[in-house]
Image (cartoon, rainbow, N blue to C red; front, side, top):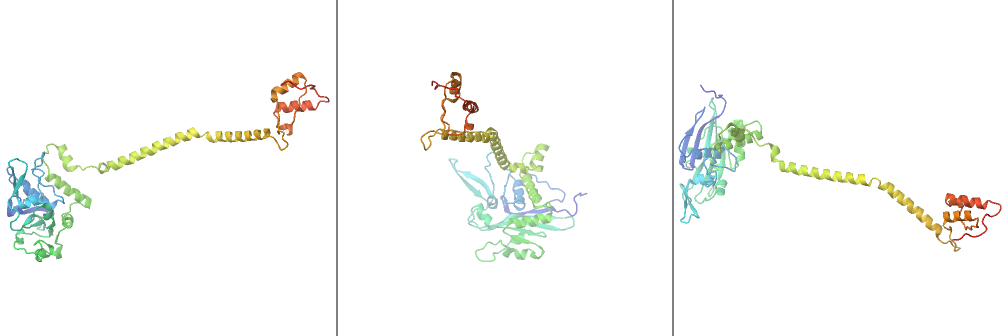
Amino acid sequence: MSTVPAGQYRIEQVQVLNWGGYAGLQVMQAGRTSTAILGPSGRGKSTLLDAMASVIMPNPQEFNQAARDDKGRKRERTVYSYARGLTVNHQDDNGRSATPSYLRPPGGPGFISGAAITWSTGTGKRLTALRLAWVGTDVTDNAAIGNSTVYGFVHDAFDLARLDGLKSARAGATPLSEASMRHLIGPARGDLVDQRQSRMHAAMRRTLQMGSTEESQRLALQLLRRAQASKGIFSINDLFKEFVLTEPRALERWDVTLAHYQEAARLYDEFELAKTKTETLKELPGVAEQYRSAGQDAIGMRALAQPSASGAARLEIWIAPACLEAATSANCLLSYQIPVPYSRFPRTLSAAYHRSMSEASPRYTRTPSP
């Protein structure tokens, strides 16, 4: 008894058309519960999965991840190599160059290559997504394939055999276009054919309910791509690392975070330097004020010693403290020429002068020796 919900879309059919080793149209029916693809190496298992991936996965494609040589990756595959049916590269005698061999080589008739996947529910609803490319006779690279590729989404089953005899809408144009395929689809029910993969993928994700947001839809497709590309998952840890866990977004911006941290560290160092300078120079305003005051005092003192208009200095002092002491002890006459108030003298000299001038008779009778 099936446990799959009846309303859930499951793959019902896969069609491949001129893809890799599959010539013409090949159809694989899938069971609703599960399907196993078995076969020896080189029989086309990865080719079939890559055909499905070309429809579901966003560009650029990464084909044959599981089957390629992991070390040398000598068999890198593209939509072009699958469309032409690359079989082997023939090496020259020196082994320096290789000539590719194709099942559908350039120069032959043009043809359509691609794949289609049909999903169905248990209630009979069907959806088909397809990717098709016109391979003209002169197409020789992957870029040319991309220019002639169309994507489609149909709200029903779609048989690629209906493309037989498809003709271009105008002379010189590719047979695959919205105009040439309009009669094969139902635009009124939301079917579309477009050269933009994004439109088909948006319709597919929305209808199949691949996540509730665009981001979750993108992650779902990434999970499918990683599962298809898997090789050698041997433990539950590897399973979770490869398929379940995603890289934290913080790691995606580690370089920006590191730059911000380095800037913060630089600003912190500048702050600490400014703080040290401030502490060192905080006494400087007081010292500067003392220096300014001392300078003003020095200027005033120098002015007192300068000659006046009469030729005499405003202040003449003979070695004031020592002279006063000598004059006092020798009872000699001390002469002063003081054109300024004695209140400007040093305290000891002013007091001695005042005392000597107040006496009735001079105490000093002779001039002191120098």
